[in-house]
Figure 1 (spheres, helix red, strand yellow):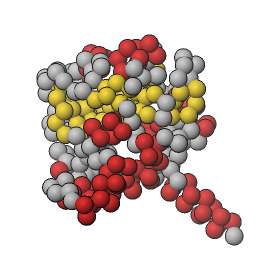
Figure 2 (cartoon, helix red, strand yellow):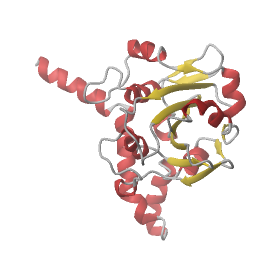
Figure 3 (cartoon, rainbow, N blue to C red):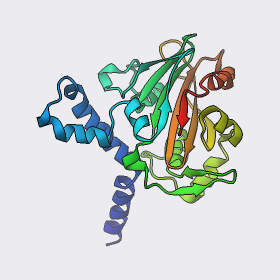
Length: 252
């Protein structure tokens, strides 16, 4: 009886997590996206309704959540939707960089070609009912972001990522760089801006990128994870690359 109860608890934790919901969304997109946009007719109304709920592009996700997206020089938006495995620019299985790219919603490249960004956004239909916590500096933060950060940092993770427990959230906060709220507002009209390094396990992506940093910006339930791919030489310039994004993502 105890074993059955424990199993049930684990299943509820797994399937009730945002991570699992996101997996389901990605699977829906992978199954539907490649064949839909060529020709939409009245018979496709169900699919159209699906994409209203789960927009397949970064532009659609941002528009749905009243986030302005306007990528311009020195950056260029090179992909506005998620990848299917055969399209990934990295084909090394088990590569940390490949995992980040696979879960992204869009990719951006800097004009110097030595910095790439991969974006992952909240989804209104999944995140709008999330647990929000007031911030000391004003505004609110979606507590679900800490489960994603936990997974990125592999903090207290054995084999499978799970929802971050309150005590784990307190520990994770100790590992983050918290930018001033005034800077978050100035750059993105966000209520917070957090940064943490990604352990790339000394791997190298496409014989160039060796370092990765993630900057999370957000306002109320909405958020954007920005994964920066950098080199040994320019990892120190993260704040420069971040400043050059000013105004390109804007929480209305």
